[in-house]
Length: 298
Image 1 (cartoon, one colour):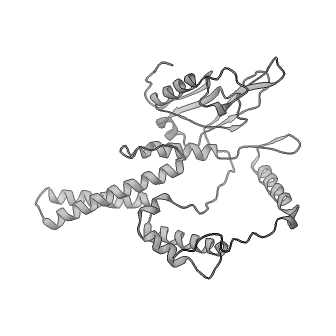
Image 2: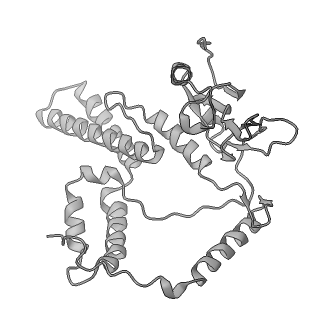
Image 3: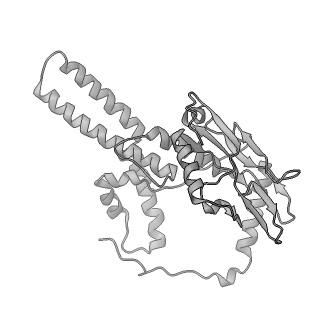
């Protein structure tokens, strides 16, 4: 594929007649590693990001003359960072194939009405850069309690420490940058040893915050690579928003084969599924004793 060099926000979607990995195929005899590599190189050279999808994995399916079905994800939507920033909640749905062996792509620019989310505890990789993290875990871990009892106790302590001590990375970045700018403006008029020392301290603190911010977005983006010399947090921010969009449940198929997309019906279906799951064979599930299975924290 030739490099087009488009500028500005743009999205391209359709049949690219190529896949990125073997996992995007099924009984696909014409898979070529070289062609996939060239396709990936073109995507990277244009600065594009795969928007992901919900629905069936294969967008092209054909019955083989040998009696089996072959298919591949030949259709996809790609966008650049500028377009994604304009439509951060956009998502892609692979619709059912009806009159063609290709699945139509539905591009939603906004989140579905009534969709809700909830927050839950996540261990932040950026915390590992702070030496106080170990102290928090040591203080909150009760040696007289079991592992299952300690988990919520440590989780609460870490959440409080994150809010009250470690702080919001983006807010700290703004504050430190503002202080650094003020010190440098003062140094423009006259030199002061204390201010010069403070400038070096704030500069080092700012670099540390940049590193923490990169870890934050890298963890959220779920990307497999990172370039520490090029702190491209804008890319990771975009990748993270795409992950959230593709990680949203847009529809589910019930036991009758019907696809459910309405929010209230989705919630009812999921609730009924787990009620049934945890109501059956409850006697066989026993309580797992994890006492002594892990080394104690000293």
